[in-house]
Length: 158
Image (cartoon, rainbow, N blue to C red):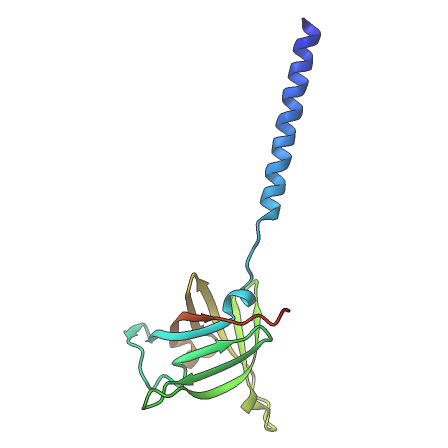
């Protein structure tokens, strides 16, 4: 009888260890979506803040009524113009610091013999909402923009 009891205890412990190992594997299998995958697509301005005061999305918001990020680290920003026609204002390349949530925008217009540094933004993406908060000097820190994703990026994978 002791042998059977001992065998049952061993089987129970082995089963418990197996279950624990499977739980560990499931935790390790969770897919973490990186910012680079989340940011790709088209975003429309839904709100802006300056010096802590809420403002509605204005037509004169430095040509950032919409932003497009592609999977090849290129971006475009623009406005909808007076007549509602889409008008590109700026374009260039972007980089992301995944660990710190920082977006760097390097305008292609900066390459005309100047050494302008990329603009830096604190980046948060929750669901279909992207928030950009200026980094750096006091002027940049005054601005915060909120965007809503309106279109997913097209994949370049075959």
